[in-house]
Image: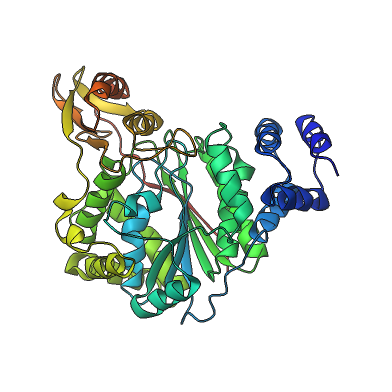
Length: 437
């Protein structure tokens, strides 16, 4: 086989066979196919797409490009969750310890930031000393003892996806449905969970801008997981504005801590409760959704979920006093309010632009080697439907470089749109797609 010929065929709209995809992934993982050729293939896929068969074959090839975790030593039904990525999406920081507080084993593999979206691992590294480089033995022990562990994707777990994930991030090939579906599901299939809950984002701040595309992606991932013998549910949720108010690593951690103490923003709390309900029922921690939600609400409001979060941070080498005192987390030296350029009701927020402003400030990666400033970001003061007077603060920018403040402030003010009329509430949960198991 020849990579040049495969690129040309795909560029012209042709389909790749299972054998060709297996060969391509195997040789790219081993370094025999260079980045520049795989970049060309990823761009060709972005332009012409992949068939359902190609997507399934790509997913399985990546899942089996390295180790497939054996979590049989973990007691109970293992449940994992994954988000397709959004702005201000700190859901896993709240959801994982919350579900674990019900005794559900949460064995989770998480990633770093991709494009304009943040990554769970980057956020957790706001805690001094926190490590997601766990051995399989440590991972299993933590889940059995405190019901939760979150590890980074190791070199031997779906290594093809790890290489492609970093490559797509810097070549403008992130937002393609088959590539997103295969990336997510290859990790989920390789990471050994029994049941999977997917949070599929749709809207301006998501990779899937249109609900129809999000629905198609959700169905594709549920289908892939079901064919592989997993119990899968996809929740399609709104990303036409940031989730919660904080955007940026340490800032999002602080908001997650508030939510774990029963004091967080309503939209984040609701999303966590919906996703957690499915996870708890799949794991057998509750007989029905109503009971599961009640148990989850009690855990948030009583502080039980926060207690598990604190244990989790400590178990993975982090400083638990930073959970008790979030002001000890990284803090940017400059904070500047962004005044509203107009008055009226906020009718729209260009959410992807909010994520890109955070990237400008240093809160995300421009290249594979870019360091992340954990302290920077944005805290919104106004969201859709809120009323703002001219000059009233729309948001506060947290920056480490004062020279970036003028551009960030200008772009952030321009990301808001206004209407003289009150706005209708937009539903947070758009649709639920289930494997039917």
